Length: 120
Length: 205
Image (cartoon, rainbow over all chains, first blue to last red; front, side, top):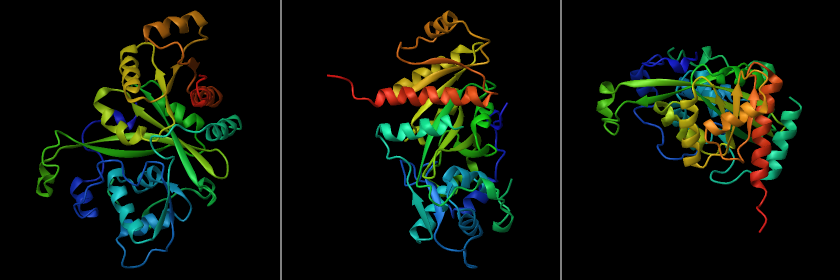
């Protein structure tokens, strides 16, 4: 059994999430952020930043995927991507993109993955 | 689990931090029914303790565009476990486990966008879930291989029977897998990568 077996709200309070994002919802279509887009901080937190934004800047002093940021903050990815978009707009983070969408992976990339797995 | 403020967020342990040289991440998805061993497989291959990310599903979608409707919405969270494998100093592979049942397919949009491919983890006692998953992956054009968890020292004819039962096209690999074993789980991922590699070769004209 995994946590996914449970249904019903067992995460953060929806009202709280609404406050964190100031009522904004995540982008509905394909957005800037994939689950594995790597986020790297370009700035240190400042006292005026919202705590969640500051937390992201601290977490991402070394590269972390959007999924990892979501896991460490214990916030849904849809909320995290809204916060990340704020930070990206302000130039406080860098987003290292995942593989371009709708393209077949090239053989060089797959070769690298195969070699990496062989060492596992 | 309310957000506790920025000072109490526990980030990755020092040894789990990625080097700054990492420039790109790719992902693969492990799909299967409950209890088939997705989480076990992710844990077997991951270099970090598997993490959990949540996504919220809004029932019925009523009032989605109406900010005042938030309180009336019933939300369900679905958790996805994932792990990480550093490929080299520039590339990282993430492995996500996701439930195969139709009611969780809403998760698939963000998940499969840009994914290299999928491993369908099959429970021989509940083939119907795998059947649905395979159909859905084919519809979406996601390349996949099939791994059969806990299949005891399978004779090849049994895998062939399973291939028939799942109505698998002949080119799709099907392999036995022990999700508890790092090596066996790694091999399932390797099967996927080699399959993708073959697909990437331009067909001779």
